Length: 257
Length: 257
Image 1 (cartoon, one colour):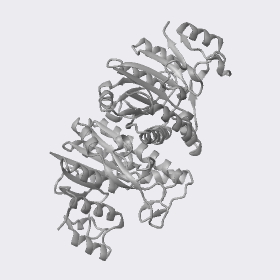
Image 2 (cartoon, each protein chain N blue to C red):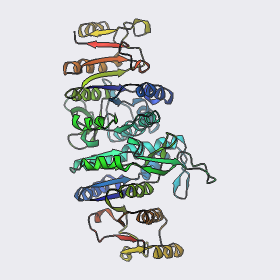
Image 3 (cartoon, each protein chain N blue to C red):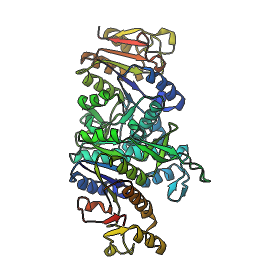
Image 4 (cartoon, helix red, strand yellow):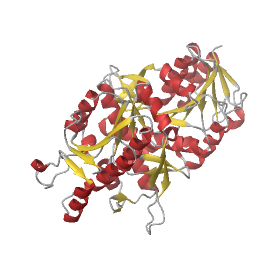
């Protein structure tokens, strides 16, 4: 049986009109599928409003206690429930979940890299059996990247990594297609020119793009996670714009070789 | 089979130490049980920080779009996931849910009372079958009072009413005991004197207390919901302090006559 894992984040789900469009496409996908989302724009906005300092290293937010509360409120709260409501409006029976719920995604607090990351975690394990129970009942899990630390606290985790870990974990049971949604058509040879879409990207092309600096920094975690997921048994991985969801030839297909 | 529905809110779950104590008691309860929570203190605090005006009529918050976002962030986000993490730490496999998830609690937008309530809903129906599926798997549902409007949007709903509606809906399948947690020992004859606990409260005593003004305003929605739930088939209803959870003789037992 197939299963699609779709990562979507940023303005694509944080602005009401783009969220609506994305959910139109999601509602047209053949089940089963799982949605994993981000929510950094709202978290940034809230941190600014609450005068919390924003400190990001390598694209990862240093998360003190006050920032963790904002992250959980934004990701597990508003964004998660907005996506669920938008899917329910379209007849998709979604269930919004975070890693702490049923211990679906347990992570290890990031430490020992010379930086005090605070409440930041890296995925340790995904409970594919619990996720599969939702899927078997026809429910679409909508997962926020708030995870449960092995020490029992909530941790802020990278949503691309959560999506990849979920895809890998589900690969024991399903043939999994992993889709990373972008606000571009896919990986572009020239990031400023939408007509330079690369229909496929191999590891070798990826390494070359990184050397030349033509691969956009924001794409790196998606690409690294896509390659890792393929190596760990995910059937396919693709980067695409949400308007192309459902089109198996759209976007950039990631290939191990 | 028995099932306990526990409503808990305010400082009892919004301060880390009280949350820990409450979860110690919850973790010692015999399963199955369902937790329904509030979260008004954090919502008020956020509204103040974000300079959103607070307008409350009859204990119910008028909820414009910006306030709805705060409500969803506070209730469905931070409070919900904090309770789930605290229960997981104590070995209880909890799952944090809101009414939109699996359409568990659908509500009707409040209208026609001369006030524009905004995004405020009154419970229309609870999907007891979906809730029972969590219970049957040994999962403890932790429900926020964010519900799904019949028009598809998220609505702010009174948590006491959600707890009562959940208890009534589950009464088709279980013998349900409904517990409202308070920061007092129960209903007090003299609200300022903890030694004046009423071990039981009938409708007649309740009406008398309302006339005399000895029943605290904050207790009214809990008491009204408790009476309504008993009339609709809930086996028992009780108001008590969370430290007394598990003690069937503690607090104030609500009796129809």
